[in-house]
Every structure is written in structure tokens, then in C-alpha cells.
Amino acid sequence: MSATATKLTVENVSKTYRGAGGGENVTALRDVGIEIGDGEFVSIVGPSGCGKSTLFNIIAGLVRPSSGKVLLDGDQPDDLLGKVGYMPQRDMLMPWRTVLDNTTLGLELNGMKKKEAHKVALGEFGRFGLAGFEKQWPAKLSGGMKQRAALLRTFLAGRDLMLLDEPFGALDALTRGQMQEWLLDVWQEDRKTILFVTHDVEEAIYLSDRVYVMSGRPGKVSLCVDVKLPRPRRSEITMAPDFLALKQKLLKPLEEAVHGNAMIDDHPTVEGPRR
Amino acid sequence: MNLDGSRMRRISERVLPPVVFAIFVLVAWELYVVLWDVKESTLPPPTAVAESIWTNRVMLAENAWVTIKVILLGFALAVFVGVGIASIIRASRRIERAVYPWLVVSQMVPIPAIAPILVIWFGFDMRPKVLVVALVSFFPIAVNTIDGLRAAEPELLNLLKTLKANSWQRFRKAQLPAALPFLFSGLKVAAAFSVIGAVFAEWVGASAGLGYLILVLNNQTATTDMFGVIVVLASIGITLFLIVSLVERLLLPWYYESREVETEGLELEPEEIK
Image (cartoon, rainbow over all chains, first blue to last red; front, side, top):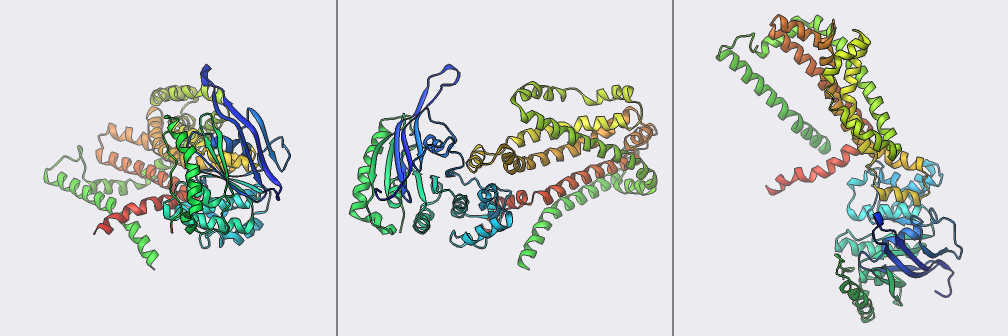
């Protein structure tokens, strides 16, 4: 990471929401610091309610932090909106657009002509496993294909940094494993910078160069671990001793986070890629 | 061939049951009238009604045309006003708070009771009748459009923001298309209401039209002919409904084809159990 330029720096970011109707203020994030180098794959793991979504919305420019800075390529832009690729948890494909027209949404909003946008998108349909489904409505796609279409939409929007919010959270374990391998392949080819949020420790280790563990509330980074496993990785790696040791290390603060907060209804899962 | 076959089967599965049911009811009705020797002035048999429609076809067509004009103009006005009110209400929270409750209250006013007042204001020409039709049918359009303009997912709107879409682009690319299925639900309800409205309006003050015809025939206790008029009125309502549905299908193919995916699995289930 020292060799590459820094893509994103989150510096002491805090976010406090004012309580509704004179209620108590809620601190969603406190002094969060994160750094991602150019072309890195970095994950954030944490239980729900740990402020992951707030952090994502801040980096995407949808929410302003109460204090702290977000630097992109070393600069602090006035407005982050439109500078970072963002893929929400649910696919958010528009049911009234064909798969092809969904994937070109970003290009279209960048001002590209429809015909040209189609050409660019069609060039990627094979790699994203969507060939033959260009003219279909999104409702006809399987869960995995919907996520790949949403990912292609994010890819084509052409931002260097992409935020992926639990993109595989709703998929069955088998599909999820396939999608993880596929995502690694695609990332390996393009080397875009990815910030990935997940509940799943195994998924985070398998995919990432570095994993941040967040705990709530208020949300803060409780652990940061570099994953030095060799690439390209295959799912067999999840059985390697190094991998299991990392998993243990990451699960510990997570379990503490969960036990320390009885309010949390949702537990981090230890499910990962399957062979 | 396979696809055509399954589509044909699906259509016949949808069309056949209601047609068979209708034939069954008509036959039972006819038999009941004949076997129990019911007076024609009480309940005419379907064959007599059909005969009456054929005999009165010119008169029915002339009066139907008068009523159809009222319905279509009133319906068009309702669409215009309904969508207009919905757009204004959705444009501002403050206007919504001020206007929305009164929109609901407006429906508590019995429109047929207002009809005579409208006749006093506008006379016996088409205007009061068109207004009554618009008054009874704008509400479902307005309410559904208001709901529809709220239907776009906040997450989708956020996604559009991160893609640098301005508020007009967010409206055109997300909020408007998400609202259209709701608008069409409203239009279908309004289509049914508009026929009711037209008949009421013609009862209050008219010299032609199917509603007026019912009043005249009622005075003569011409039950069979009245049934004929009712059949024509129902046909107008059904046709209007079908036209709205057809336009919806042409305009929103995604809506129907996406729904077919959801129900296909359910329809297949019994066969798999076999």
C-alpha cells in the first residue's frame, strides 16, 4: 500500500443526528479513520447498527459529516456527490428499463448518447455474465444476475472508487460463493478501488487487502487488519491456517461488539464461499 | 410454437371461465323466467332484452352517442384535474398539508345532490353533465397519482444523486415511471365511476342520453327496454375500462411482463405436484 497513491482518506469523521422533537442526540459515528490506496480492495465488517451505512452515505456525498474530513485523491472536494460510485444494498434496478438500459444509467447521466452507451455496455455483458439478457426486464433475472447488472451499472458510471454495500447479502450461499470468485476476477482485471461492506467475516477476508472491523454504538473502527494472503485467491483458501487465524482475530472484536450491545438484533454471520 | 401454444392456453384460461360463467347465468335466468312464468314487466328474459336492443337500435345508438360524449369529456377533464392536483400537491409539503384533507372531504359531498345546483348554474346543455362526470371520477385519479409520485424508492433516488442526476432527471427517470402504474389503477376506477356520473347527471336535467332514456322508459314501465339501456350502458363502461387497460399494456409492458414472472411460478405449482 505504501507504493500506491492514496485514493480515499477518511479522517476523524463523526456524525451526530439531532434527536427528533427535542429527543436525545444520536451519535452514529465517532472518530472514524479509514484509508484506501489506489486499486485496493478494502472491506468493512460490522454488526448492523455500527454506522456502516452512515459512513457509506458520507463517502458517497449523500450525508455530510458533523466533523472530520473525507479526502479523495488527497483533496477535500466541496461535494462528494457524483465523484464516487455507489451500489446500494438492494439492486435498485428500474423495473421499467431493460437490463441494458439499466446498466447504461450512469453513462446516460454523464451525457453520453444512447447508442454509444449501449455499445459500451454491450462490450461488458459477456464478462458480467449477462449476455442474452440485454432486452429482458430485470424481474426476469435471478438474484445473482440482478446483482451483476447493478454492479455493471456501477462499473460503467466510471468512478475510480466504488462503494459496494453488502452486494451479496441477499444471495444463497452457493450463488454468493460464485459471485465472490467472479468479483475477484473482474477486480483483478480492472483494478478499480473497492470499498466493500459486509456482515460476513469470511467474505471480507477472502476478498480484501485490508479489513476494518467496526463496532457500535457509536460506530467506530475497533480493528484494522491487513490480509496478506496471496492473489489470485480461490475459495480453497478459506481452509488455510493463515485464513482461519485471521478469521479468529476478526471475530473476537465482533463478538464483543455484539455482546456489548443487546440492542443489536442482527448478528454477523460466519458464512463464506463454498467449494 | 411452444411459446405460442402456452400463450394461447393462458389466454383461453383467462377468457374462457368468465364467458362460460356468463352463459350459465343467462341460461339459468331464461329458464327461471320461462319455467316460473315471471311477468315480463317484472323480469324480462335475456332473449327479450336482446330483441328489444335490436328493435331500438337506432334510438339506443343516438342516445348512447350523447352519453358517450359526456363520459369522454368528463373523463378527460377528470384526468387533467386529477393529475394536475396530484402534481401540485406533490410539489410542496405545505400545499399537501393544506389541500389533501379537503380533497378527501370533497368526496363526502354527495355529487348527485350537487347535480341540480350545477344545472341551475350552467343550464341544460352538456356542461353540468360533464362536470358531474369529472367530479365523481377525478378523485381516484388524484389519490392514486399522489401515492404513485411517492412510490419511487428513496434508495433509488439516492443512487441517482450519486450519479449526478438533478431533480428534474430524478423526476423523469424514477418518480414519473414509478407513478404510472398507480395512475392507471386510478384511471380504471375512474372509468367505472364516469358512467355512473353520466347517468346521474342525465337524471337531473336532460332531453337525450341513456340516463334520460331510462327515466322515460321507467314512466312507461317498459322494463324490457330499460334492461336494454342498462346493457348498453354497461357495455360503454366495459369498453372504456378495456381501452384504459389496453393503453396501459402498450405503455407499460414492463409492468405486466414483470408481474407474469411473479405469478408464473404460482400457476405452475399445481402441475408440479401432479
